[in-house]
Length: 380
Image (cartoon, rainbow, N blue to C red; front, top):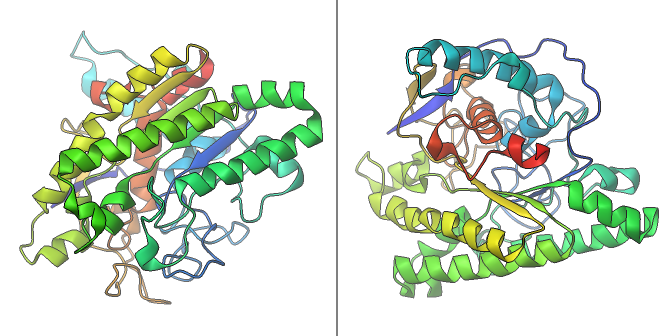
């Protein structure tokens, strides 16, 4: 199986920024963006131990299912993503100058949300932290309440929405209803859910969900997802970025479990049905809520037209894994983390998270975002 990774380049020069493009950033999701909410839950789905976070600064909290930062960290942090954008789009210009139909991006366009610090997890956020956003993501969580129960306690999307409602009440109590409404209307809300509804629900043997056809199950998920997004709108959200699901049948764990050394096409086909329904869902929500803007970004789906500045690597794990696909506790990971696609059996390395953040924030290929990218969502 082939995946993509970011061309190793220096991206950590000092960057001076003013105010963020949005006053706050709220994050809903699963283990791909969980930054510590599962640390104290009774579950096997937690990453608050080595070798997870091996490349993180000691001042940053543990709990991420990768070696460093995640895509939502990169989308928010100015001192990392901006210079990566500069180099990224320079590379895109170089490879596309001969095509007059392509847009040519310049350094003036390369910008990020501009937060000076990481968005904190809900588990530890309090006080003024709430005013700049919260990460509610929980490993093993899904759109459906029962999803992930095979691994232990988790915070489903419904529960994450309840946590967000609690935060909005705290914000109202802190700054007043009028100011809180204006603040919440201006924030960015990213939602990446659904992978566990397949991995830790539909494709579990004898799961009640597996009695549905893939088309029926996708319909169930989309209908529930639509209701959840409408509820989030009711809490004041107006700028929504939804992430598509990645090719879960091409994770190292799925490939190893198949015994065929190949992607599990049945899993990828099922996920594709869900992904294909996200664009019509975005159209429906944009029509229903004219005061809001909904977009869908490609996320961790494999691009079909890779520019020359992206390397293609073999998708083996960077750390030794246990039978569940997670890194063995305190095991020694590979030294070539910057060119690996996957850190463990399910989760990408920081390298891939950086690419996903860049392409979601400033889309280049038509398949990367619809109807626009995150940058235009927050600046229009």
